[in-house]
Image 1 (spheres, helix red, strand yellow):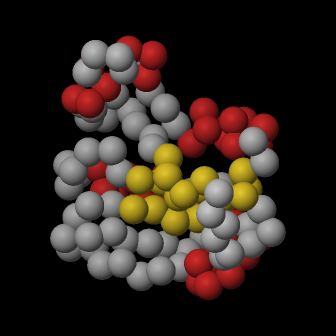
Image 2 (cartoon, one colour):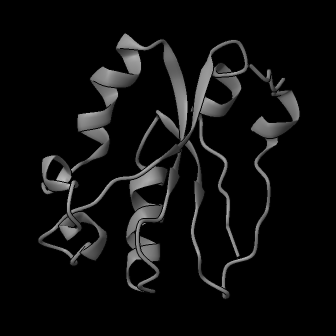
Length: 115
């Protein structure tokens, strides 16, 4: 079940673009078996919030939602810590049953446009 947090960037992001699904990973912290699949070779490296930041800025993204990459319970608190330390990440989605989903106040200010 996903979980959510409220971050300072949430209030500032209502007028901007939100990337609602991105991942971060550290190969030294834990294996990411999906990265070893054929065709994923360009992704087989660490990818952090700091790597995302310039790309988000260039695309006009003012806030993001980070999504857990593997269902290893040890990854959950690490991902939540990354999100809590970021002014770019406003929400997180983790797949652990002990966490319950509590939508952040940000989502009440979002208008979703379908293209």
